Length: 376
Ligand SMILES: Cc1ncc(COP(=O)(O)O)c(C=O)c1O
Image (cartoon, rainbow, N blue to C red; front, side, top):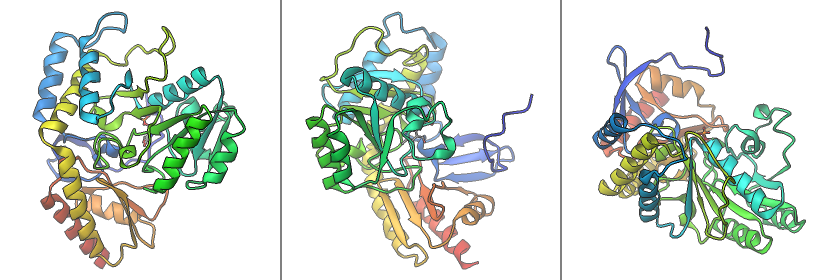
C-alpha cells in the first residue's frame, strides 16, 4: 500500500540520533537545528528519557483514563513547579492540534459563545476548530470553514476591542511568538491589552504555547515575557521530546465537569513517563539558562552576516530573514553541509529550532556553513 502522499520529503533517512545530531543509514552525521519541528527539547535519545520510557513500557505502557494514574498527578505537579504556573489544572491529550481543539471547546462550553478571534499568519493545527483558527485557506476544508472565526491583524487592538464588544466571542487564541507564520511577535502593549479586554468581555484568552513553550523562548512559556494571565495554555511538541503528548493548562476560574473533555490515549503511562523525564531534565540541566546564553551567542553571530536582513524570534525559536527565498539555501545546508534548518510561510525566513541543549560549537558549525553557502 503506498503512503498517502502529503509531505514533500527530503531524500534523507535518519535511523538514529544523539543530542543535537541525527544519523542516516550510512552513518552520515547531520546537525539538527530544526529539532523535528521544535519538538526535540532535551536532546535526541537523552539517557534519562530513554531509561524512563524503557522502564515504564516494561511495567505498564497504557491503561485507559478509567483508573487512577499517579503518573498524571506527578506530571501535573512537576509542570506546576517547573513552569511556575500556580493553581492551573491539567488536561492531557496527544498533540498540539488536539490541545487547541480542547482549549477552544472548553472556552465555548464555559462562555456559551462560539466565535473565535485568531490572528493573521497564526497556526494552531489541522483539526476542526484549530484549523479554522489557522490563517491558511489552503488547509481549511469546507467542513472546517463552518466554524465562526475572525482573523485580525496582530497589533490591531481597536479591531480586537470592536469584535469582543459584540459579545459573541468565546476565545482569543494567539501564539506569543508565531512559529509556522515566521517568528513575528506582537507588541507587549497589544498582548497585555488583549488580556484585559478578554477579562472585561468574558472571553477566554488562549495562549498557544505548542511551539514556544517548554523553555524554547528562554522562559518556560513565551507569555511569561508579558504581564498576562491566559485562561488556557496549550502545550505539546517539546513536552514529550518526540513522544506524542499534549495538554492544556486550565485556569481555576474554569470548573471541570465529568465528560466535558476526554480521550483514550491522552495521559497514558508511557506518555507521562516521557513528559516527566523532559521536565526533570529541563530543570536538572538548567536548559532554560542554556537557551538564553545560546540565543545571545547565536544572535551576535547572525549580526555579523550582512545578507541577514532581520533576526526574529526569541530564545531558541529564531528566524533569519534574507532578501531572497531560502529554499535552495536550506537544500544546500542539508545536502552539502549536513545541517537541518526549518522553513516558514514567509519564504525568505530560515527557522532555527534546535534542541535546547545546543552549544556554541554547534552554532559555530552552522555559521561557518552559512558563510560558505552565501559565498557561492
Ligand atoms: C503554534 C502551534 N500550534 C499548534 C500546532 C499543531 O501541533 P500538532 O502538529 O502537534 O498537531 C503547531 C504545529 O506546528 C504549532 O506550531
